[in-house]
Image 1 (cartoon, rainbow, N blue to C red):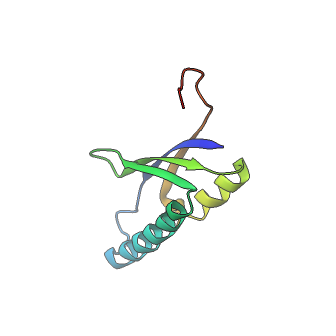
Image 2 (spheres, rainbow, N blue to C red):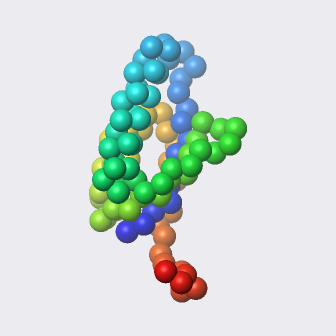
Image 3 (cartoon, rainbow, N blue to C red):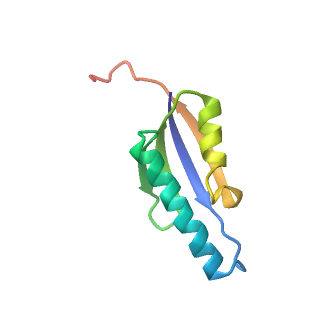
Amino acid sequence: MIYLVRMDVNLPADMPAEEAGRIKAVEKEYSQTLQRQGKWAGIWRVVGEYANYSIFDVDSNDELHEILSGLPLFPYMDIEVIPLAKHPSDIR
């Protein structure tokens, strides 16, 4: 199943820089592991925002929920999930 996911990150203004840096480092490793596994198929930054659009290729809604809720930045995110289906005009 393919999903388009928008993630907007809203770190608290009073979060210590060291804590924010630690969380971001763990997040990076987590996301890159999922990318190597093929589950996080693509990621694009939204210009001028602390946000991204990502493509996930997973087996189920439950698997996607588990992945997203496992993100170290999850408590500080607003997430929008859009399930995608193959378009009949796609030549692939």
